Amino acid sequence: MESKDLPSDHNPLIHKDSRSVGGREILLFLAALPLFGLPVFWLLPDHSLLSLLGLFFGVGLAAVLVAVAPLGRAAAPALGFRAVGWRPLLFGTLGTAALSIAVSQIGLEPQGVKQAMRVAHEPAAFLISLALLAGLAPLVEELVFRGLLYGWLESRWGPGLAFVVSSLAFAAAHVEPAHAFLVLPLGLLFGLLRWRTGSLWPSLVAHMANNGLAVAAAAYLQV
Image 1 (cartoon, helix red, strand yellow):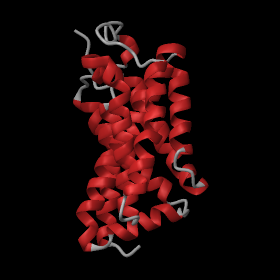
Image 2 (cartoon, helix red, strand yellow; image 1 turned 135 degrees about the vertical axis):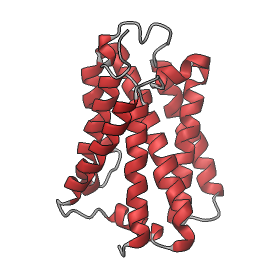
Image 3 (tube, one colour; image 1 turned 180 degrees about the vertical axis):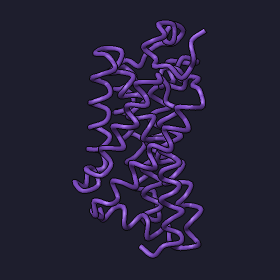
């Protein structure tokens, strides 16, 4: 019996019982974003940073759910929620922590990150920041980039292109050049985890752990 830790392309049966993400799902996602986002933004009474982050990622999650709804029970495996062994979870998280520390030594300080960490430093906002930045944000980002986008590209042009394009798109989505530059190595690692395991779990767990450590550090260190 093959180990669940082996690369997904070593197991030809891994995708047998699941449908892949198609162009329909991508179009539904892109259509749902403004459909949900614009009315909620107009009605939002508080435009503070945490409120805007909650709106942004909440709308993103809703758009993903709408996009994959036509897949029914096949939605979860299509997005990459497939069983995986404990080793990719552990070593993916440790590797992400080491890479994040190494990247932080470059010395760049993106303004968006500084603002978010400054808010997390406030005791009253810590739990909300933790829920948004270490829970909702990585969940939505992984669903969008290593779930929808990766799944769509992989089904048509293979995992190699899916790895490269989804990793670059993940970095570009952070908009601010310094921030995009800093998260690109992490995006490549997350994409590699997705490629080699065939599962979204390792990158999702590593992403959440990384963001959680950053928020926790901001709560005790002056930004």
